[in-house]
Length: 245
Image (spheres, rainbow, N blue to C red):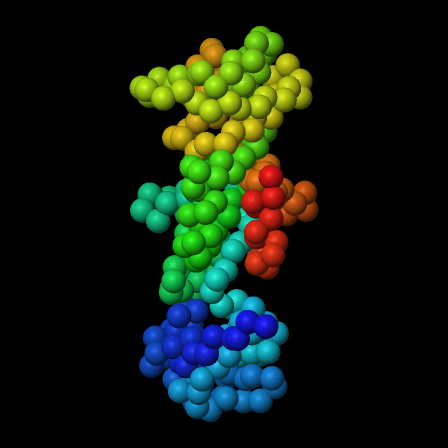
């Protein structure tokens, strides 16, 4: 059995975004923090930190936020960006406000552009993030596309050949799988993450992507009942399913 990490209560709650160390010390002193039903008064107490902590600790009567490492599966809506720096509404605005203060901070695993919706992972686990996006792993990603013009019928062969060159690049794309839904709708599965890759692939064969929605990353599929802007916390074993391909 893995031994639980121990952390000072004030540092733990500050890292979870509940305020500065001083703020947290005042919170504890006011009797707002409880563990296993008992009020905690010592902000310097050492607490066992594991995935079960939200089941044991409350802050102002509500379950404490999950400790790191945290992985979220979100249904990204249209119109929000995945960057901390771009203007406009950001994907992080869809999370609890205090989560922006977490340490380590949360980052998206790769990005979806403003005009793309669908499955995106968000995490504070740097190792997990880099394993998912590593070019060596070739984690597949599946997108549902609607197109401006009807498919010609030759696109699947072009994409699967592994010879398609995108404009401005010197290395051909890896083979990709195209599954036609109807004349202007298709699913495309790629194993790379080049800039605007799906849109540029269809542009290369004389078409234009009207809508783009990511349905799947590796072994993780966007749940049908997860509304745009909503998210779910993935337990470690479920998050690792992204590599089940």
